Image (cartoon, rainbow, N blue to C red; front, side, top):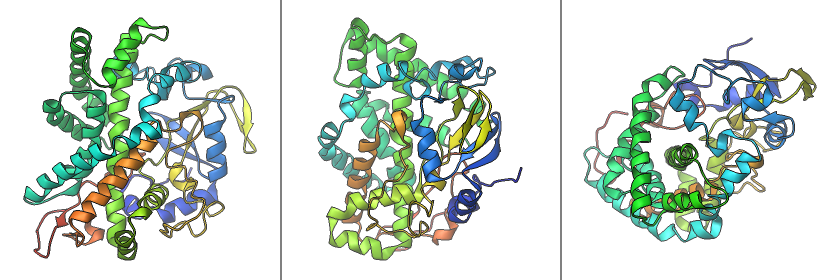
Length: 409
């Protein structure tokens, strides 16, 4: 089995040579992942989409494919297994029951109502970035904007946002499977905090999605306490991490494509098209959760045993020349840009419209405020997270005006 590098800074800085090879070697490429063992990466666009849509033959819950536990890893700590009781880790009908409880607030018309609030939060954060010394866009803006928005949607107290920022910073530093054990204290603290918030909302309901989910306890589709905790936990994590990395990689891309930035400055209506191309080109979420073969079967001409694991490699699917002309070229005029940046099938990302709107609004405010914004270091000196499955920057040191601002990358 040839070793595949999909975690190093060299890969994250320029992934397209590796992605091109994965597509050529596909559609199935075996890859050994710590703790999981060997997994088949599904690397081409058509094969990845087929895997994501085929819930009849493939499961996300390992127990539906002969495994003894949900994730196929019986050794996982109890708290991790508990947090797995969320809609992302279930098949239908449980997935459908859980997802419909939170679908409403994430529909397009509801998300658009939040656009003025997102712009307001963005302006406040940019004020703080301007006052910081030295200014860093990842820590000061890209991470804080989506986290503030999802906390507001959930109805979590604003004064507690710094605690969430610290907890999420801890999680973002996880670079390997061993890191799971390092973040266990944070997970316990966050779980205890959320359970306290549930009790407060039961006694004194406040506006927000947590209160709405608690109301479900007295209705037909009642959430258990563990399901409620897992639901809010995954909304917090998934509700900010993808957008954090989408924002940071989008800014980095614009710094390397000044002609695109000039086009956007001249025509703000093109921001949605830019965000779609950034989702394809940067693929902040590089791969999906594992899928398990429910039975012995054949997939793309390859015999498969029950319980074998597959991951849709979204980044390589988005770089498949059979689907995208000249995929290594960044092009906001690309037509029919049906990328897999948000996955596909019944587990299509719940927050896709929120991520799109936050990125559009946040970047528009950023470049309206500082049209001459530039990096304080050469782009090839930026530091990237070496975390499996995600692509994002550790920092974005800035020059907000013509004054040089020295800052380590």
